[in-house]
Length: 219
Image (cartoon, rainbow, N blue to C red; front, side, top):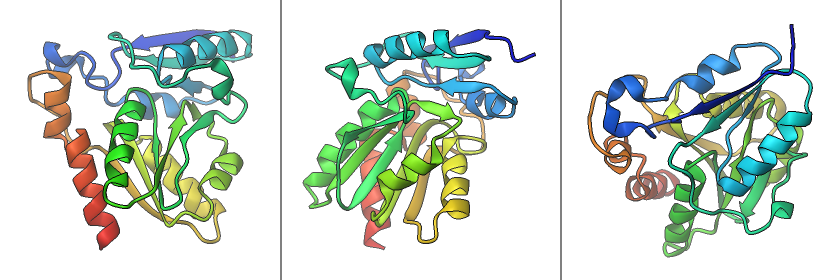
């Protein structure tokens, strides 16, 4: 009925890692994306979560807000840095490559970007906090001219934001960059342990991501 119901989900990705595979929230974006008229948000820190709460409360129709129960490292210093109109913010500029990430993975993307600079790769980071609908026109403008784009998510690759962005680029860009999708493989992670441990199992820790990107751009 398109009512202004706001659904707040906690425990995104491997946030509830120590409680085992039954508590992994790694398919929620795919499930929610299939629902018509539903807006999906995934904040990257406490300040962006506050802005999303304010924005979503003013919007008509339903929304799903994807949160981490353990909180976030700070990404923004001021709410003015958060581009609510675009649905994403360019957290760091780069000339060679851009990492598009959401939620907790934005912080990881920034760490990887710093390491890439040590290998003479000038990489930027985009915080995509509005996952549906994606502002295709502005996102395409943000990556225009780049040779490589990486989409990083703590979510199953099947049905995740990477697939959505790939479809947008393919359908709306005449000349699109090489695209690498990094996320959880199309299988359940049956491991137990902390979040960092599970990310390493899926090659989503900063070291593994760095190695994957360097090997990819060299090829």
